[in-house]
Length: 308
Length: 165
Image 1: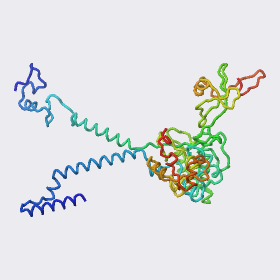
Image 2: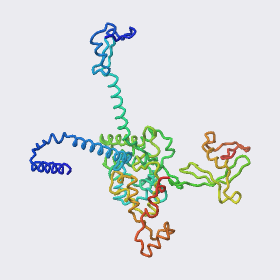
Image 3: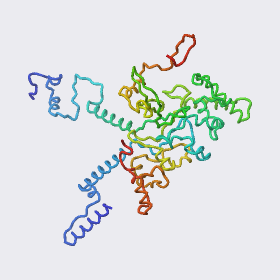
Image 4: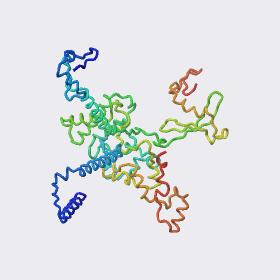
């Protein structure tokens, strides 16, 4: 655009000069491009663009939108929340009563998986990891006594036998063939890899999931305020989790994103005991002076709400 | 060409007043590296090159490392105690006793760890009052010299009683 205008202006100047009888030689493109003005403009533009990019990228440092790491267990939200329609808060039960929506403990998994021992996608490969973590023997349907003091060899014996037996049952074979042996070895290696790391040498004990949604330490966020009081759907911030095979961070979790939502979102004010003491807003709504109350109206933009 | 002051010379060429060498000393920031015949070096670059590479290397490494976000772990319970909700504090009524001091207290705990001791409002004796010692006693709960378990004591009757001094 600017180039076009410059070209038009120079053409007009040339015509004006020609009318007055002067002869001005037309500048070649190379001359124009290497002229002082153009070079100054280009350097200026480069500095502005560079600074703009630097600031933008620096602001985004530490943000993880779209972060979808590999988890120790290939847990699929699509299978659990999508196909089987398990409520989010059945497993993430602390979302309604705590600031954290914590990752469910292994015993929550066992509520269902004490009975469901073969996964729909991965068979015994992923579910055996839960059993190895908590110490449940799926063959006898009993928790193993003194599991914490068992050696790795003892644990390996229990679960490789279970994986092998399941393989034989599914394939209707009497003995483990080569493929079966390979499968058992591979699944056991995977279980060991998932449940141990440099800090945690034992198979027994908690599953160390990779945390996806991280807020900086100087931000206070409360799940129960949004889920129980605000009656928000989990999907508002977390996206269509029920369609995700691998869990992914949908929102930028940036301050601008929070603030924007607080400006736009209408508070569910009616029949909400939590907001009963906002009498002026209730009166204004009843009198028809006000059609909605946003989060910003009740102090959702105040710094100290989240940073204190 | 009288450049040697007080007969101080550096290197053989300076001593013999080699013409080429004398010319090169006129240029303080010589393009070509001044080489001393009797100084041998295995390094191909010079000090400035080294500093350039060092600076670039450090800068590049910082930028590359700074952009990497460390993997954070979320470790849930294996078997979660019923009364614990992560993120919500639990309060337990207890008693602070130290020498002759006595005080009914409420202990605030997070995930099983005591973090604050306050007086118990429900007590008819103190009505929620505490002392500095009672408030500070939360630190003593983390004293490494505390007993980590119950004590065993053989009573007069020869049986072992748990939880008795």
